[in-house]
Length: 112
Length: 114
Image 1: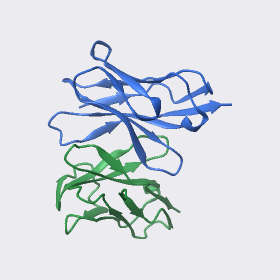
Image 2: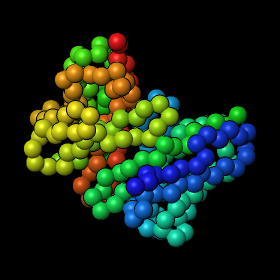
Image 3: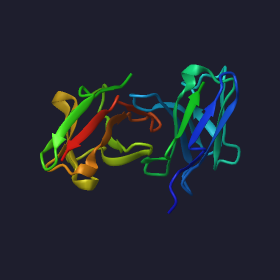
Image 4: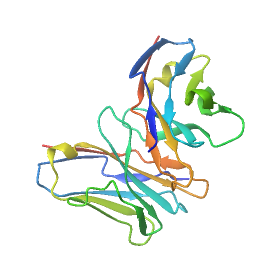
């Protein structure tokens, strides 16, 4: 069974540029999460989807961050414009009925 | 709001020695508790979880953890560490009715000396 897939694995951009991350969850998992992990810290939830509905986006900085999960399967997280402080690892996770979260390898973003 | 404290940022143990990683949580009711491991450049892998019942939980790779309500702790243990256990370990708490939202600690970096 394939795990959570994320792309790209690494991204380097200049500040003020836009960037997008893609996530494909485990097949059959209705719940999808995006986390932000700063260096030396644990992951922090940005947004959680139940199918195509964002049910918890309270920690998403909506002035520059957006996310979508149009068909309730894969998801895209976007930052526009990126700032230096956005350099971090962006993790995607998914869960099924037992609520156990499975994590992807993450996208490491560097903003110059 | 719930919170998790992992007091040890770094721990070094010799291969074959026992290991205990500390985790303390703050939450008003019985929490769901998790331990994850993260190797460099990898996502998080679930080691074990506690939802209810037996307070001693067995996980993968020979790890176990014990939930102690009186101490608000959920420490991770392994009787004999292998060099491949070197990684970062995260404790997390989930709350009942919280929609499976997890709050993570800051992690403990484990180094294994050969």
